[in-house]
Image (tube, rainbow, N blue to C red; front, side):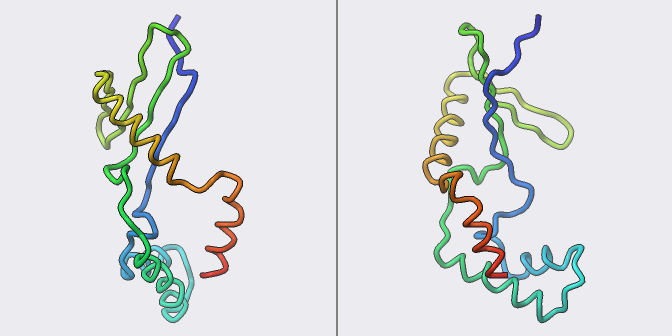
Length: 127
């Protein structure tokens, strides 16, 4: 029987986070799949650029990763990093510990899940 992960923690990023987007990049994202006028695009892109004034770097800017934890006590955590044509499985304790530390930092820096609806409504109101 194959071991299966009992806990999967993942950090994913599909686009540049809003706080790190240039105004031009933000406009291009807004324009994509949108019938918005150039005036509307500019209005919606400006808050993203202004939020950069309060943004800072974060510990996971290197890219997406997943940490797999197994129920079997003799199996160590594994970090999974998917790439375009391959994937990496990191199992050396020093490597895994680095990713666990980054995940913990992300969890400490992130807003509580209970605030998600409020945050999304606030972002929506700004656009």
